[in-house]
Image 1 (cartoon, one colour):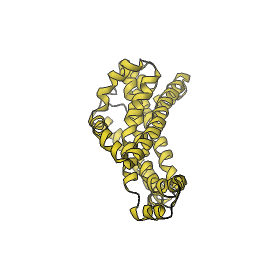
Image 2: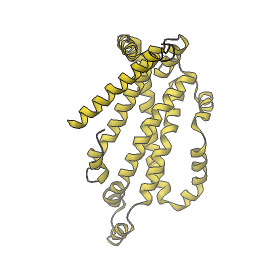
Image 3: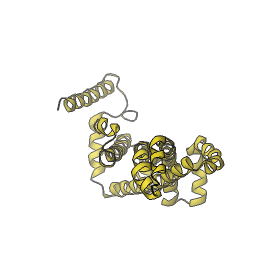
Image 4: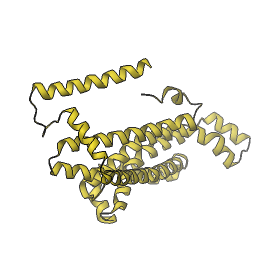
Length: 255
């Protein structure tokens, strides 16, 4: 309760500083609108049916890319973390792609997958892939060697070893990657909408910028931040469900 009150107070202080700055320095609303103008613009925006179409589009692109990133990243991370020869062969390509600025690849993906929703999902997946892959790879390398020997001596089946040893050891790492991936997947979806979108909140933001509706532009950014927060919190909350025994699940969860 005390923590919530402190956080609420900090938000109120932030809004007061924002308002004071705009008034005292006579800042143009085309540069920084006052908070009440942004709130009004947000209310108007939420009353327009098109807004929800844009939100659905961005969510679909983001979650589609995120799911692809989680599946591919976790599987490839486990495979390369366990099979040395594949790790040797593919690691240079993975590292090379990881070091390449992903934003620079957006024109290529648009060229290959078109201006439709497919290219946005691919870009979102690429942005989210590497955090999941890196953490899954680290999780595969972090399986306790002593426990692994115990399973070997006991001649445990692969399926049993995977269920009782590999998954519990790797899952906390993969969840960490997923938390980073959901943020990057949102960025990928929005940036691709900036570049070549005809719908979505990124596209809506560019439209409002061109129309110089700065207060509505701020409202769109606020919507994106809210969606990002909800998705990040949802993914982070999976720890308490999937790895309740792990220390990170006890430390996490709240702001």
